[in-house]
Image (cartoon, rainbow, N blue to C red; front, top):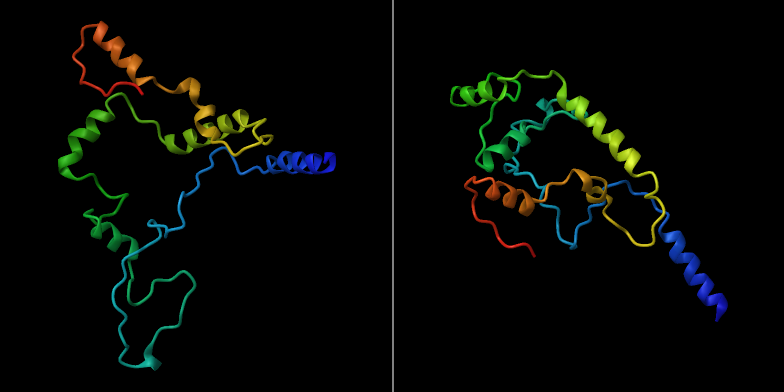
Length: 167
């Protein structure tokens, strides 16, 4: 009996040693992943099999030469160059958002700072009994309590929209 209890205890303790990173997101079902499905055009038979181009690794295929742009269009988006000029209808928004200056390379800088912050917060997360999502625990001091913030603004006399009661 003691041997069986020790065996169970050791297996539970060792199962908590797996390090899958700070954020653990798992699907709850066995269904397909809807984010990997891409729309495809029907296959076409070529005029001549001898005139086909040589296949290239990572190259576009003849049926769907731009599958990501076709997917964007299928969901109602516009196909445009992401590094192209700002559309005229969004120019005022871009100008207003950059009124205090723009930091070049802010995304790269923030990504590096966030990775370092999560690395420091995850120092002792490798030891656990059950799988836990440590992302929210790492950022709990930086999280905003929406109900407390709404109450603060209401006390200050600001008009605030109604919110559902806290659960």
